[in-house]
Length: 361
Image (cartoon, rainbow, N blue to C red; front, side, top):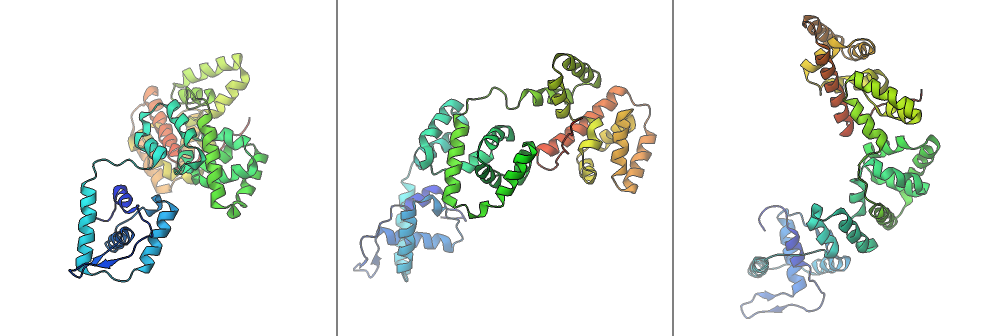
């Protein structure tokens, strides 16, 4: 019982509470407590020591019985307290391994050791009676996995889904919806305050069941995103040649890929000017100076955009460093610009930055 946290094993050792039985006085004068009274004593002691007890893991009936028992008790002498603590510690010492939580607990313990097919089948078996919070699983899924659900479900369910996600992921999903649908879902979010907690849980279990029932995907992202990501880090000559070829094969797909691509050239259109100082803090100074000094043509506009949206003092220092550089090889300049783009992409993935939506041509 040392420390400030009580383990699940300790909490479950408290769990077998019933309300039957009273207390008696032993010949020594010590009080003989019932099991529920002993549980109340242990809980009171742990809480007085600052322990964090996950009592919510117990059933509602046990939590109620424990609270009622504590309400009925007054004081316990030191000798009786010592006996209860000794018995409790002895019970813990005799525990070898503990398995708790039924099927949900087993799934939690096994974690990623099961195949996706077996895990999904077991989650469906657990069903709506699961003690696990379905929203923990849902919130851990990517926007690409959640978007089809958001598009197909009713406006009210979509609003609940958005409300349970992190702000950054909800914003990302909302930005992927058509304008009219996005407006209706956003308005529905304002009406979710009156949705009962048990209804939110039922919606969560239903959505989790749908997501688990979906066939496994070989890739985490769609073809547009995959091609766009590859071309992001390809040399400019390769990127232009591929896009030209895609135009000839499938102009619609080529246009979608162009929108998915984010390169140094796209910085003025996709980065909010207010975010430029934050971006520069995440870029190696040497790489930044090389990228700015080596930028030519359309890329030169991006360099000027960056310098125009930072303090004059910082911009002046960077310009001085750029002048001092000797002739920059095209490959070094391109590598440096790719490093700037990679830093921006990492910030976007971490939710530290939002790229401005690419407008239709």
